[in-house]
Length: 273
Image (tube, rainbow, N blue to C red; front, side, top):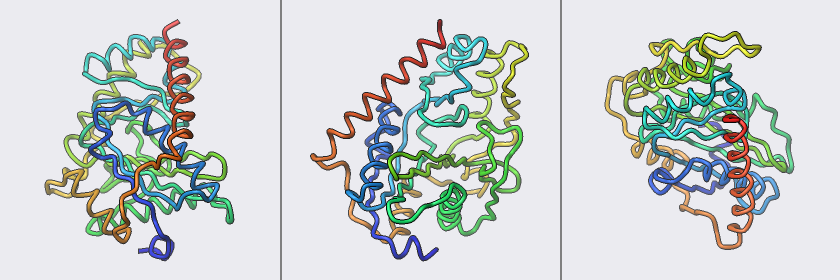
């Protein structure tokens, strides 16, 4: 384990069960809140785990698809709720078999460049699955492709993003732990096919090839559960006492939640104009 993780006193907030039936917008607000709290030194660096049922998180470019309303109808037909995230990237799938981990750090005393944030999360995931050879490079044909796609034998199971607010950094990873990675990719493929309708666009949307994606259970050849990974992560971080938002932090959370909800509503309304 890198010394950084061993030497840090972590706050641990597990929402892998409590957030499942709630909107994923609440998780983006939670990470924004933690960014300000950690960045200002009012909270220790934080690990937050979160899971949401059947949601597709769209990026800024996704809501600019020429036939976005048809794309969103396809998502709803698949049983998924579309929302628009408050940071970069493209569409990703959240469901009960996908574990999200947020690593919230402070730049108050020392700057952390973007690649260093990504590398910290990469090392954390490698520590969680030491039996696997995990590589980080863009997997062409996956959804939300990027240079920090995490893969085993060329099949992607995770992607990393970052959010920076008020000297706080939230490095976020989604881990496809259970179920079929290809089936999740098929949902996003159908979304883009419906949203594009074969039209030419200035932005190059990914051509999804479902076989490029898999879950950790599929890749490692054993049944792995989200809760198992949460427990392993908690142990790996030294077993910190769980700590959700405290009463004095909830007002700040309310501010960020209102902002995220209003922005999402505006984006969705603009998409359907």
